Length: 338
Image 1 (tube, rainbow, N blue to C red):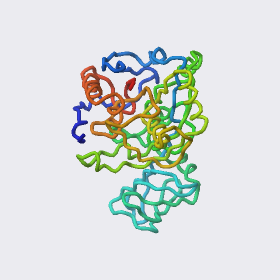
Image 2: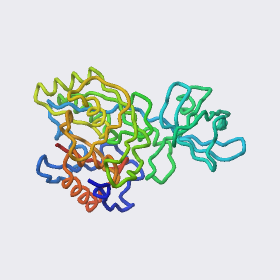
Image 3: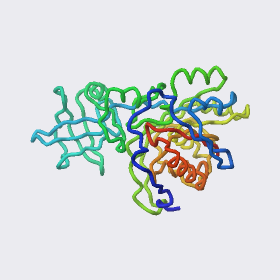
Image 4: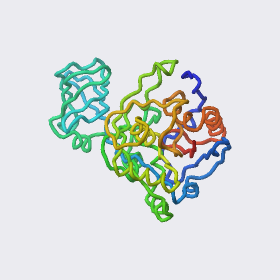
């Protein structure tokens, strides 16, 4: 398939710029298993779609306030977007400036803080911070809202662009399907007998990068760190034994689980993944998927098309546009079975 096969027309007015007042207030588009039949529901109905024998798998990554503004000694403005923490004092980042900073360049940050450019690797710069990076970000960092959100971040984004179960710091973009859950809904699911498990996948800014080649076989997927624990592997095995479904909350949970099953069976794993899922991929772990709506021609739209079928997904997106669903990170959700 070609990149252009995954284009659809989206009016700008349907791109959600703000979250709704309540996390569970979104709409939920459900696709019938094997039929492609569509049903318009509310997200609060999600609990009715999940069975007591099912396992919900959440991504527990925590979004860090990864965007910084500073300036060089010359006065030139610098914008930094941390891509990955390497250790307590070192990171790789996207750096925007009128002239690319050279190794040794000191970037002065607000409140007397600073960092130093120590090298470059293609589009990414290596940075060193004298203070612990997470402390610096907590003090002066901004939430890195996606490029299609055209406003500046505000205080509300610090909680709403974060899942209520976020635990492991390292993402620069939220696992957005998880944003629809609040503590009350999680308690209701637990009371119903639904079990939960967690994976970690630190979503990188590469998730927003366009596919630049028409031939998908030539696309180089970005790297993201993931971890699947033995506890989660056991929970999946127990779900299989009782005849339940493994329900991934978000495409990031799918990528983590399927990356840990590249050998053919799910095993405890961690490290970088560049798994690129396109139509024709054989899923080894995930049976159902809760996901938001994704950008045209994006790798995530290709993933959901592989999961639920290319023609049904493209028809669902046309339906969502026609019905005025809200798109992308702060938008509405879909529930799919394969």
